[in-house]
Length: 318
Image (cartoon, rainbow, N blue to C red; front, side, top):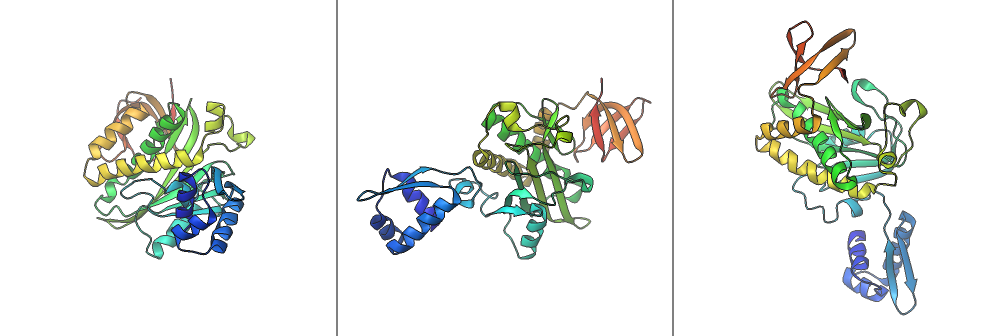
């Protein structure tokens, strides 16, 4: 009902309560209650006697009514759950999977109290950022190609940031998006898989949009607002990410892993770069020769050996 009400308000300068009630098949009292609820949610609605209601502005809050409206995707974003705060969107997504959630369901929150990144690192998730998870059932994708799910997510984020802000992000292997060599986005893909099948995947995405950063993060991280110099519309950005994710995920489902990998390589510009890889007690230095079919790095080490990098934190070296 709320989405239909917003549609009616959006189409007209002023619309009478009587006309709204008639269109929605409810009482005028029910309309009045819904209008008040929308105002509490941050919608600016004016009412003028003998004219009716007028929607002046919409809040930049990722409500389902804002994000899913006219999204026109095939899989991603058909259902969206919004919360003011959550311990973790990935954890809530797991609960939804246990209840039979549809593929493409999105969980988004304004703040996370227990957000986690790769290797169980804390992920700072204050108001103003975009913290969300997407549920997938990629049963057609073999587990050894699961890295491609992180790839499509990082491509979608990169393409969306470029489209909405004009900035030129770069993907950093395996799961970060950078702007001017500072981290603006992290991606955590969690799988439930068997030897030959992925039962489900949860892609958790955290983007610094208009939020403040902790002092100790400012050297290595940035926000879109800092880079652009003005607030970035979160709803528009999220909608754009979901559209690009939908398109790129469709390519994977068609078996076009090569298309996705080439696009990822184009945005990462990592091939041919000198890097240092740190993983627990291991440090390897070398030049990236290629990104293989499963999304891992093939490194020509300084010692002249070829090695396949399955995990680790990388730094670009000169």
